[in-house]
Image (cartoon, rainbow, N blue to C red; front, side, top):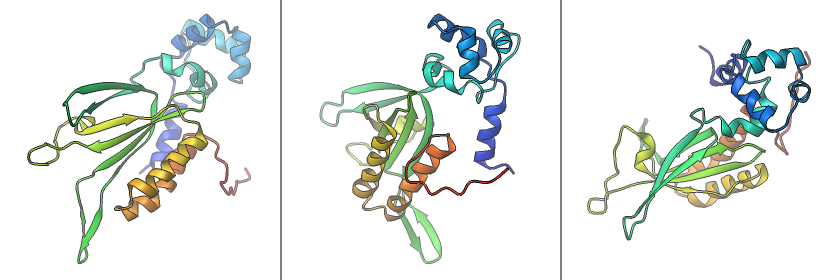
Amino acid sequence: MKTSEEKGKNAKKKPFKQTKILMKLALDDGWTQKEIADKCRSHQSVVSSWRKGVKNATEEQLKPLLELFGHKLRRNSFRVYWSIDPETNEKTFLKVEGKVIMSEAFCDARRNGPRLIKKIPKYKLVIHYQGGNEFRVVNQTRLTFKVTNEELESSQEDAVWGSEISDRLSIPALLELVDNFAEQKLSDYPSDAYTLPYIARKALLNHGFPLVGIVEYPAVW
């Protein structure tokens, strides 16, 4: 069985169906075919076939352009969230664009003898990549009914969470937010508090973002 990392690598090698649209976005922005070829480490003749729709590039080849224009493709690269004011019950609906690179829910893990019991998740962090090495974090809290204090249930995962959206964050600011969240918000969830900094950094590395302070052991091919 393939790991999620292997699946992610294979996905990047598949033909990117919106190659022609991405070419148009770059050309309309003033890029030449030669500039696109240089940026994508390809040849102008190949870029011409991309522009005409004769051939599709891979996501890996188009990564430099996706960094700049990916958010304009509207290829389901957004999620809809909401927040509900506890006093007025006013609802605010939120649309956050960008690929989700991490979505992690947190619950208090307890044991009854050898049997592991997990309570219903109370908090959740979702990280969207928004291009230009900037991110937004969605800080979610499980919604409950006022009278019974029971958690909402829905077939739509994000419908049961109240959400707050961060400002755009650089990688250092993102990691600082995650580490502070683990230390402060998850004080009653010790396992999650300890592992969240690792999970966030692994997610960034798996998506190709360079991190400072990582001890690397590169292979020689």
